[in-house]
Length: 308
Image (cartoon, rainbow, N blue to C red; front, side, top):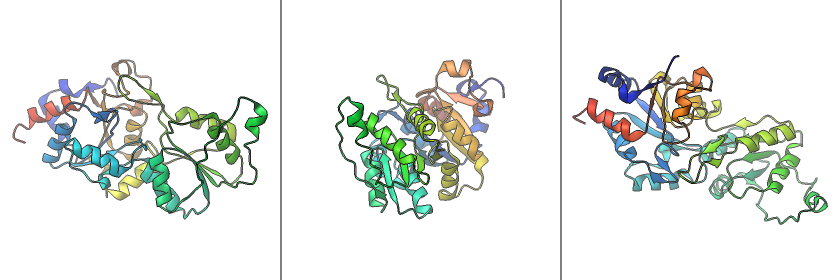
């Protein structure tokens, strides 16, 4: 594809053509709209100006630590004017996956309190979380193996209280031949401003895959399940007129590839100038354009469409 182009430095005509090339736009949240829920300068103005250009805006996040309802509340405080229906995160797609296959068996969950609450509210049979204290002796550790518990699905999502025993329980359950491994967030890292990044679930999932021999079923970015879900939910019939704006080369740009969407990479989150200058990812992940952040994109919008 050649060298990535900074959208801020191409001709005004190229900028106009780019902004006219899509009708729908999906924004990632962490690293694009905010960092640790602190707004990135210009993000809300950029999104509202795109709405003035008659673009349909939705949000596509791999963060399941808050429900879509809570995310909408935060966004509205930042002047985004959204509803929870505008937001898709792994809470939505995990529940959708189990509902689509009429799953009624027991589920072991590693995940956020918001995900657990939503799954239980949706009628899924999530086994209760039990606080376990383990001393540093193998014999004591192995006593937590219970061969009588029949778990038919293990769900792995980001969990800030992750422990060794939680991971080992996943392995024990996944050793059962009919137990599925369902994964939401599969990012390697997540941006959280100066104190980050924090470790994503990718490495834990790879560990479970190797230990259990089970292939994960991915239902968040950049999975085909997620792409099919949003195409159906938002009635996307012309994917080439849909744009993904994200900071992750693997997750966001990967979603765009699977969906046949356009892609715009921002450098306000995980992707860096080093990634741009020394591309080490699959060539297909490379977008035509990148931008520093949404504030720069907003400046471009106001420059080429001064009457909005």
